[in-house]
Length: 204
Image (cartoon, rainbow, N blue to C red; front, side, top):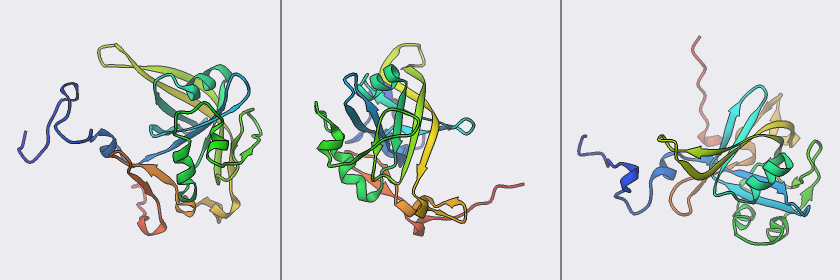
């Protein structure tokens, strides 16, 4: 291996001050997931491992380190909502990452709004919401087949809410709401702006 590269095998640890994995696979959309607890109270938590996995039907998913409330609720109730985190909502989102035994909506000063196709509420101030029916909950495994303490929750999107101001000439404008994404390091985040956009047409 060329000596101008940091090389390491993850099983043996890394040679840097902070694990670079999260910084390299970045920025990542934030899975701001709302669910309902067993007692009917609302739960809201951000997950930095989140993405889209299928077009038709649309399927999105988030991964949780540990069998946390969002995983349990999505599995038991069969549903969850994803709420877009914008720059204006970043501080509120960060507050919902706290490990607490209370309603994270109230903790972060967020208003709930009822959903159309699922029972769990979503963040009223979020400009984009996807209501989902849980399709799979998968415990991740290593290459050798050992189970990890991580769970991938996949859900089929059954309803979508988009603020009309973000749709121009029938096209959703990604940068309009300055979506926030997780970077690396202990506290790095990024947002998208129109100045960063460039276009590439697919080759025919």
